[in-house]
Image (cartoon, rainbow, N blue to C red; front, side):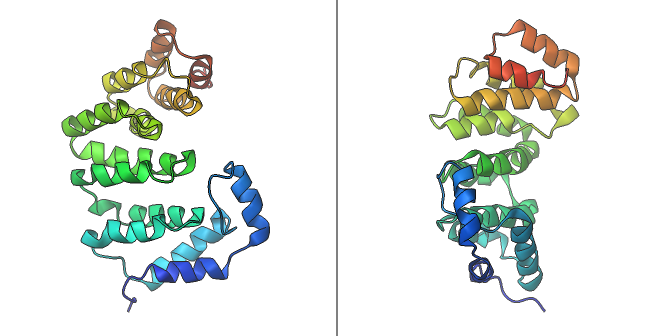
Length: 223
């Protein structure tokens, strides 16, 4: 019989494995944006696996309350744990969750959290209702928040044949002049990934549009 969900079990496990020697270099790798406990990915995943084996998952109505209890903690490993909890319960997500997912993207934002959330959860929400999802993505593309823009660009990363090419290119065209490294990189990444499915279309798009050198280089990496 599993115990009733308690996020404090994760805190206890993580705190017991705090490693100050590793915490410094891990924080430095993330440009000092976040403090770390010093728990590397394999150990973190093992500790979470143990926690999920020991505790029943929360109810779907409680999901984001529990997610925020972890996400709001200072050390970066807790944001990863919150994302892992969503991953465990992603079948419970609905299109009503776009606003809270956007809030997560815009909170403690950096490429590691955004790139975990956008292709997985945002992509899943869009697939539930393509017409509505596309409208949300066009709105996100116009957001003042760069990370929300990046999420709109990369949300179809895993769509392959299901990619809405018109939407992909429309969102990219809204950002081709961006001087922001993470936007230029996202454009290249989205195009490179879609090129695995439709290389000629991507090649044609790159030839016909004025992309920043970084975006172009990333897009054509495997040609």
